[in-house]
Length: 151
Image (cartoon, helix red, strand yellow):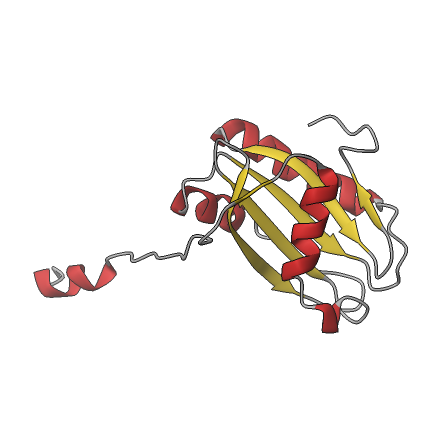
């Protein structure tokens, strides 16, 4: 049975985003952390894990950001396809990923390294660079880049 032509039109993808009105140039990890903390849901920083992505243009300006998931006390789901689908939608050249550890212990776990590697490899394949991965605690943070992790 053939699908009527008018039903095919309903499958059209629509995408929109609101670029930041005054893009902020991210020149170092401290600026990136400051930006992430400014948009983070502070009420959940010590309660639930959240996963954010900050999208950058070719001039390293933050063009938009997105909280991709709010999870449990000690875990959050991350869909790599969604990270890069949104990157393509806003024409990002690179991105910074971040999540929080509600416990305040910001040292990465084996799962954090595994996830970082997966996202970095996808970025290399898709030509969208992963610049850094932050783990935020209430009063501290961990930058993979600052701690010698090679992207």
